[in-house]
Every structure is written in structure tokens, then in C-alpha cells.
Amino acid sequence: MNYDNPRLILDSSNPPEPGGITWRSPSNIAIIKYWGKYGVQLPQNPSLSLTLAAACTDTRLEYEMRENTGGIELDFFFHQQPNEAFAAKIKTYLESLVPVFPFLEQLKFTIYSGNSFPHSAGIASSASAMSALALALCSLEDLLFGTLKEPEAFDRKASWLARLGSGSACRSIFPHAAVWGESRFVPGSSNEFAVPVGDRLHELFKDFHDDILIVSADEKAVSSRDGHALMEANPYAATRYEQARTRMGTLLDAMQAGDLGTFGKIAEDEALTLHALMMCSNPSYILMQPGTLAIIDRVRAWRAETGHPVYFTLDAGPNVHLLYPGEIVAEVRGFIEEELTEFCENGHYLQDWVGEGPEEL
Ligand code: DP6
Image 1 (spheres, helix red, strand yellow):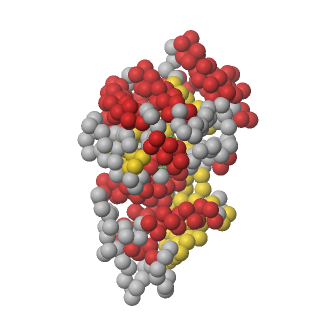
Image 2 (cartoon, rainbow, N blue to C red; image 1 turned 180 degrees about the horizontal axis):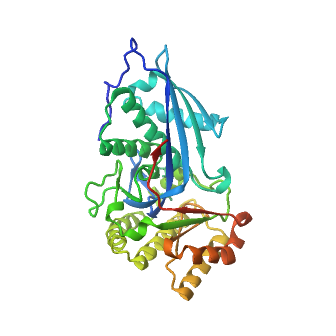
């Protein structure tokens, strides 16, 4: 896939009016995890995620023609405040996209970005933030050149661009669920962009919850980039990648049939495998905390006691995601309040659910 396009140049004798584009894009939660990459942001194994709804980023991209060309001109505001650290990252990202969007060097940009969840919630915002920006860039291309009218082509390019910003972000482009990475079980799947798989899933995944128990809101002990790099020397890497490739088929079959038992078994095993891989990396990281383990214990006990299909997953951190169908929302919320919030920082947890994907505002 090569999106380099020298024709996307603005005619300076007929400059566009200044304008702006705003996208709201959600976070996602991986059921089969992406952990390990190669080349330019390419995954070592396919991953599958549910697209969330409540945890999202709003990004407004304002542009105006400028006189000089060369380099990226950008002001960046996060929750109304100038943010130099984010500005530098976004600038590097946009610079890398100049062969794809040569017009980026002809415009001056101001970006306003903000998350629906508190910055200190211990939730990674790279997936929602990078997907929102990628979508805004595709809308800008279409507005200036009329070249992305076809929705499938638009989404594919947005997913490809989002991947370059943060791997997991490429999955946030699609409603309900997406697969990123070549898989023999998903026609049209690719290492370069995600594809939607929501249509293949049982109805119950359209009303499906992910409540996020905030065990700690501290900064991550290891960045995603460093974490992925640790897989290069991990003695279990090859076995792990093969496991993910094989179980993609089992997971999709289970999700199609509405078989929550198999879905939950894979979700929990993926979370614990991710953490096991971090524990036996060099250097080693233990990102679970006592509260994480206590919650896992209680969830398993409550499930055995009540028979309710509630399962956990984890990202590269201590917070626990509880996955369950909408029909038991009242029971699970009662359980969380009674038995789990005592392990959460300030009793804090976030309610999220499977959503319809990004929207232009
Ligand atoms: C554990 O997408 O944050 O959440 O590509 O370096 O930005 P970069 O990594 P990132 O990694 C996410 C890892 C994960 C699992 C997942 O979301 O699949």
C-alpha cells in the first residue's frame, strides 16, 4: 500500500478559505492483543478489538493557507492549554506524512484536542487521539481535493494513517469491532490497516459493556513503544505470535455464535499472556498491582457463584476492564459497587460500552 501522492498540492493562485474540521473518535479494547511489531508500525500478529463509546477524543483541525512553504506549522492545544510535548509529537507525525499529503507544507494548522475521560484516569489516549487526527486529515484531503468520496476508501486510508501514529489506533476507525493484521480467518485483512468485523458478530456484541476499574491512574511504567520492543528478545515470542494467529479463528467463531464462555476464556488468557510476556521480558515489568489480582480473584469467584458471563481483560497496566453483555448490567454494577470499588483508586471506575465508531461533528 503506497499512499504517496505528489498531486495533492494546492494552487497558490486560488487558495482555499480558512476552515476547520472536527472528529470525535473512541478508544478500543483489544481482546486478542497486539504486542510486538516490526518495520514501520507493522504487527507481529493479528489483533481484534471492540470499539468503545464513552472514552473518546475530540480533535478540531483548523487550517489556513500560508505564504512560505517547507516544514509543518502547527499550534496545539490540549484541553484549551498550549501543550509543547504533544505539539512536538504531532509535528513529527505530520512531517512523516508530507509525501502522502504534500499540502501539509502549504497550510498553517491549529489543533484543539481533548478527551472525554480525565487525563489522570490511567487510560491510554493514543488510540482515540491518533484515530481522530487521522480522520480529520482524510476529511481535509476530501474537502480540498474531493478525492476521498468513497466511504470504504476513506476509512481504509484513515486506518492506515492512524496506524502510523499508534498501532492500536487503526482499529478505532470502525464500529463495534475490528481486526488489524493479516489473518487467514479474515478476508481482506492486512498488516497495514484494520478492517471492520462487526457484521460477523452475534447481536449481543452490539449491546456489550466494558467497565474500567481504575486500580491506579499513574503514568505507565513502560511506554508501548518500549514494551513492543521487548518482544524482540523474548524467548516465547514465536510461540505467542502463533497462538494469536490460531486463536483468531476460534474467537471469531465464538463471537459469531454468541458463545460467551469461549470468548471470555480467550479474553482472560490474552490479558494474562500479555502480562506474563512482560514479566519474563528483559528488563522485566510487573504491571499488575495487588488490587488488580484481588479484582481478578473476585470476578472469577462471582462468576462461579452466579453463573453470570462477566470476564476481565487488561491493557499494559494495572487497570481491569470488565466485559459483559447488556442484559446483566444491573447485576454487574451492583457487584462492582459492593465488592470491587474498594480496590480502585478513590473508588473510581468508568462505564463504557461497544459503540458505533467515530463521528464527524
Ligand atoms: C497492550 O498501540 O499503544 O494495548 O503502536 O507503539 O503506539 P504503539 O502501541 P499501542 O500498543 C497497544 C498495546 C496493547 C494491546 C492492544 O491494544 O492491542
